Image (cartoon, rainbow over all chains, first blue to last red; front, side):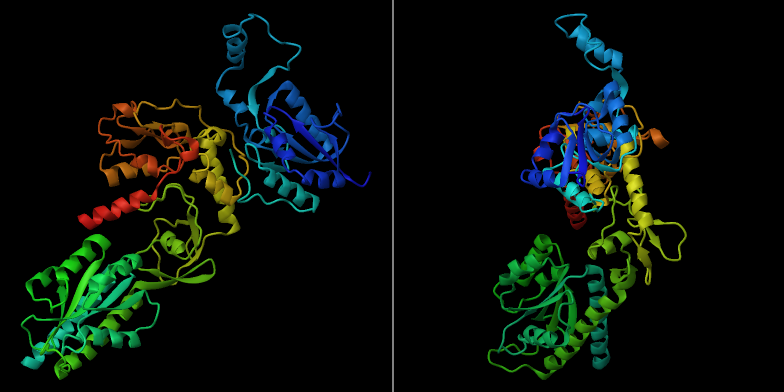
Length: 177
Length: 410
C-alpha cells in the first residue's frame, strides 16, 4: 500500500465534464487503482486534502474564495499538479463573466431575475472573486491538459506516461474546445 | 541562300520553343500526331519515338502517342494537369519541305490540318480553355503525304533536328529554372522567383503561418513564418523572401519554435478566443497551429476588453474579438473580389479590421455578399450565420482557384 503513488482529483469551477471524461477511460481505471491510491476526489469520501499527494488533477477555473483556498492548499501538498480541461487551463466558460462586474451579476441573478427577492446566499455559497482565473494564474502548474473536456484517450495517455516516469508530450494530442 | 534561310528557321524555332517552355511551368505533355505509313505525315509519330529514347524518364515531361485522333487523349491530359502541351505534327505551310516551325495554335485555322479526324485548332482551343494550359504546335512542312509511301529524306533529317531541339529546350528549362538550396539540412531544388515558403511546401517542409494564403499577395505580417538564413543577421519571413541559389535555411530550430509558440500565445491573448463556444472550433487555423506547435496554455492575460459583434449583415457575422489581424479578408476583398470594403482601422496595438467606413457591415454598400472574406478568414472572426459549428469548413483554396481563373481570362 505504501509504495503506491498517491493520486487526487479536485473539482473547482467547472461542469464535472472532465471528471466524466476521466471515468471514460473505462477498463484503464482498473489498472489505475492497482498502481495508485486515489486519496482525495469528488469520487471518494475524503473531506480534507491530505498532507502529501504525488499527482493531483484539477478540473475547473478559480472563481470563488473556496476555489482559491483549495487550490493553494492543493499546490502546497502536491508534487505534480495537472490543470485538466479548458476551464482550468484558460478560464474558458466560467471566465466569460469577467467582462461584467461581480456586483452587477449578483444583482441581476438575485434581484432582477429572482422570483424570491433579496435572498442572497452569503454563508452557504462562497463569495465570487472579482475575476475568474485559470489555475496557472494563481499557483504554479506542472502540466496543462486542455480540452472541453480532454478526451479519455488524452487523459489515459497523460496518466500512462506519468506512471512510466515520462513527461507527456501533448503536441498534436491536446485540443482546445 | 536557301541553305541560310533554312538554317535561320531552325535556329528561330529552337529559341522560341526554349522561351515558351521556360515560361510555361514544370509539367509538359508532348503529343506525337500523324498517320503511319502515310509518307511524311508520320513525322509526329517518328519524332516522339526518338524522344522516348532520348528524354530521361520522370522529368515532369510526358510524351504521348496521339496518332490521328489526339482528342482521344483529352481525359488523360486533363488528369495530368499539364502547364503546357506541345504537339508535333506534319503541316502544309507553303514552306520548303522539312522546315520546322513553332506555330501559335490560333494560326492553325489558316492552314490545312493533315486529314485528321478533328481539326487541330478545335482540339488546341479545347486544351487552352478547358485544361488551361499553354498549347504549342511544332510543325514540319511535308514533302509528300501519300498512302504507303516512305518518308522523304528531307523530313527524315528534320526529325533529327526537331528531336535534338526539343530535348535541348526541355533540358535548358531544368537547368535555368532550378536553384539549389538547403532547407533544414536537406538539399532541395527550387524555381527562380519562388519564395522560401513555396519551395519548402513543395518539399513537404512545415512552416507555420497565418497571414499567407495562396492566391493573395504575401505581406509577411503575422511573423509566424520567420526562418533563419545562414549569413544573414536576424530572420526573414519565408512568405515574402525569394529563394537564392545555395541558400541555407533553417525553419525549425529550437529558437524559432519557442518564438512561434510565443507569437501564437500573443495572438490568442490579443483577442478573446474561447474555443468551446466558437463557430470555427475544429476548423480554425490558429487553433490548429497551437496543436501542432504544442501550445497548451497561455502565459499572458487577455489584453483587450471584449468588443461587440457585428451581426448586421444578412448572411455573415464578424466577431472582432477573434480577429488575428492577418488581413486576409482585406486582401481577398480588394484583390480577388475588387470590392475593397475591408480596411485596417486605428494604429498599432489598437488596430482593428473593419468593414466599410467603420460603422457596421450592413452599412458597407459596396459589399457584394460574395463571402470571399469569410472563406479567407483563418479563425472564427468571420463566419457564415447560416452554418453551425459542425458544418463550418472554410474553403480557403477557392481564392487561389478564382485568382488563376482571373489570370487565365485576362
